[in-house]
Amino acid sequence: MRQHKLPFSRLIKPLTFLLLVTITLTGCQTRQQQNCLQIAYSPNTLQLSHFQIAINKKTIDSIDNNLSALTWNEDTRTLFGTLNKPATIVELSTQGELLRKITLNGITDPEAIEYIGNNQFIVADERFHRLIKVTLNEQTNSINSQDALQLTLEKSYQYNKGLEGLAYDHQRKIIYVSNESSPITIYKITGWIESDVIHIAEIKKDWSAFLTDISGLHFYAPDQTLLVLSDESKLILALNKNDQIVGCFPLTTGQHGLWHTLRQPEGITMDNKGNLYIVSEPNFFYKFTQK
Image 1 (cartoon, rainbow, N blue to C red):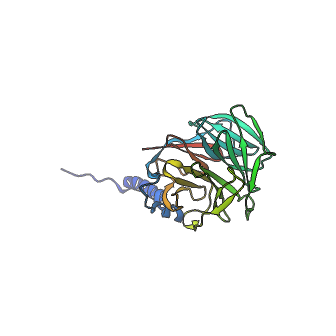
Image 2 (cartoon, rainbow, N blue to C red):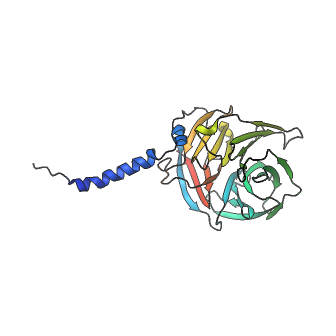
Image 3 (cartoon, one colour):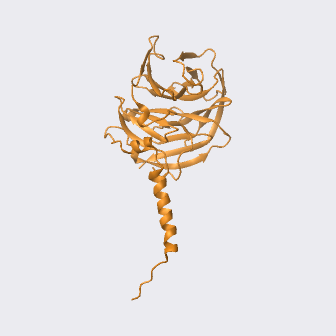
């Protein structure tokens, strides 16, 4: 039987396509992303490799820009985030639908928010490097922070490089708060909410192998895992209760069902069913479920 060979010109197109895909998935990885993929997962922590995209880059109606931060309210079963121009708290459904906006008075640059229970939230004001505890319920449409409990941390070394992430360990009463960069820092705060004796410690670590900034935090209580989101490095790091790096989640093309690299991931949280949510600027919503 006579065999027919395809002309070289017809072979080159699929070969070129495969080459481009290979370059996209491997050759364009940063050093931090390559190091991320080499981390061996710990069996006793949240298995980030099990997550797959369920809602991909959904545009949130009625939000035009500056969507930042995310937290899960276990009482209302909804999500809360922030906008900084003008300073606003937004409530979202688990499907990425805008439910309401709450005006923030007296806060200049709200870049992080964390629910701590009993209708109470902590908001991080990036520019002034301070934490503000606010209370809001289903009827709240505006908040005045003038009389709210506040805590000012060390000043950031650079403008607009201040507080960017918040997380809360309800069991151990630890507030995690991160400085975006210059330098990258994660603080552990105890005593501020419960008493007058405040203790502030820092997670001492050379972050440069994995992160060039921190844009969000979340503490997953069932596995005692702190998730660290990086906008510039396009990944999530997982730390165990001893502050050891035990897992990584690249937010790049080809990973976890993603067909594109996340543009500017700014907020991260998880709900009571183990679903993971990320919001990115200007107004995008992502949901990941576990396989």
